Image (cartoon, rainbow, N blue to C red; front, side, top):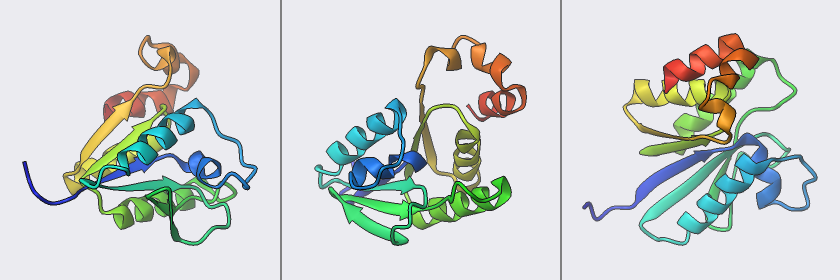
Length: 150
């Protein structure tokens, strides 16, 4: 076991309102899961925890509850610009381990980033439909890329 701190990055664009309750943004169960995991892991000094969140008008980076928050995608921009913003945030996080939950193009983007940069990628399912094939029928293109990423 190494003596240095292990950098871990959670990817949850819609989680910012959980870190900043005055923000009235919408979030779901996956964001709550990641918020709880990130804030609890941040209590362990063996880990440097960051979380990539969307652009809610906050600074580029800030720390809340021991978690370094890195601003990325602006939901109002086009998908290509959004992907570039997320990619830059992934690079800025400079983690050894990246964690994502809930099937989306974000999973594909994070998986590709980790593959190209030889980083660990941890994916956690958020619902049964990601495992039983229903997701494949809902979004054919995204789901094929998602399953290929895994």
